[in-house]
Length: 146
Image 1: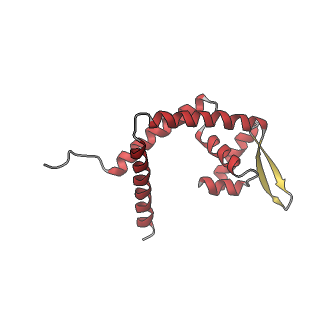
Image 2 (image 1 turned 60 degrees about the vertical axis):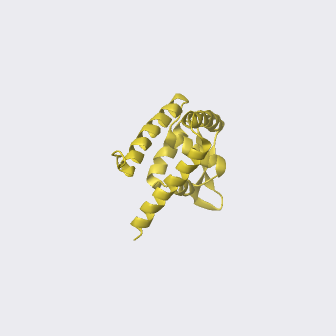
Image 3 (image 1 turned 90 degrees about the horizontal axis):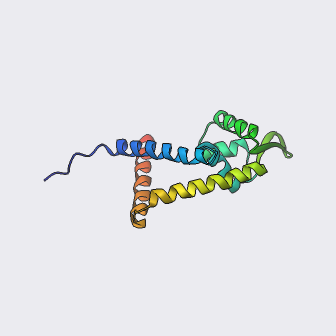
């Protein structure tokens, strides 16, 4: 007997991604942030003093989009921009005290969200999911390059 009808895998992944993204955004909003601010704060903890270009590349965003995010974060007092002494045209981005506090709040929210997602799921299945998603991405990238 054949398998019950299943939606195309791309559709199932897209639906799951939308649902999880909305829930993650809600969790971060409850902690006073957003996914974009969380990702910038996280990158700045990994790479203190990164440039706008560094951040845009790391987050796979256009520089104009990164400028928009950074302007809002600077207005909110989470980051400062200072000129690179070696290249006055380049700004290095650094966390402020408020940015450090926001990082810790959002890290807690992100960790708690991840724990909720993993609840009741065998770690082996989580590992298999990661492998499967990596394969799907590789398949798409391979198709785009050929």
